[in-house]
Image 1 (tube, rainbow, N blue to C red):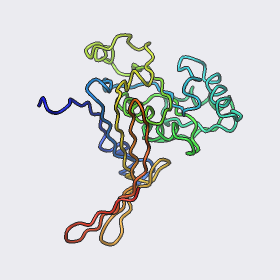
Image 2 (image 1 turned 90 degrees about the vertical axis):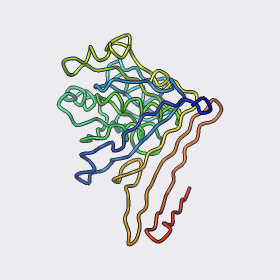
Image 3 (image 1 turned 120 degrees about the vertical axis):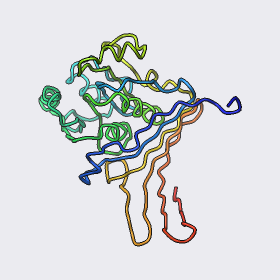
Image 4 (image 1 turned 60 degrees about the vertical axis):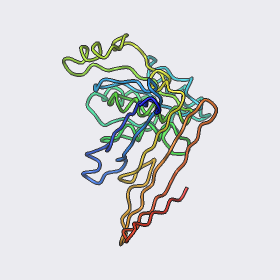
Length: 252
């Protein structure tokens, strides 16, 4: 309808389905929105990523050696490489990456799933995670970029060929540069007005999980916004009581 603006939406109703099924940490429900054209329509393939916080958004290079990036991240945080905690998905494809991180002296936090939640935590200061590295889903990379932009962090990615037909899928979606092009935050989430929100399903580094009590439940969420003049981050506790009329209390 002409009276309403066109909006791009990226959504993952349950990021970390295996995590949720096993009660493991860091399962979240997430959605991002921007004006039309404000979020990259990424193919459902893999994507190599590096995510860092505000102090290092201009210091890393996804094409640089792992050791060089770790030294740059440490310098940006005014600490030693040995003090860094890097999140990596525990996958066979990351054996070489894990070996290089360990050889450089940084600590590694291996996760079974949920690199979106881990990427956001890496971009937020105070979480104890200093970077995310490795290959995960491309749609999750777009969602991460929307969040990272709202908190002034940095993400660099490259589409990663993993299955037969991935190159054809990239071409059909009109993405030039193939698997060599580096996508920065502004390439993945170019929107001027972005809203990102996530709710914890199971407890994690970023959000608490859903907590049930007699007659209701409590949900922990994060809401981020980005406009040309303002960036905001809010943590919200929503308490819902199962009673006639369904009482809902939000605590900002």
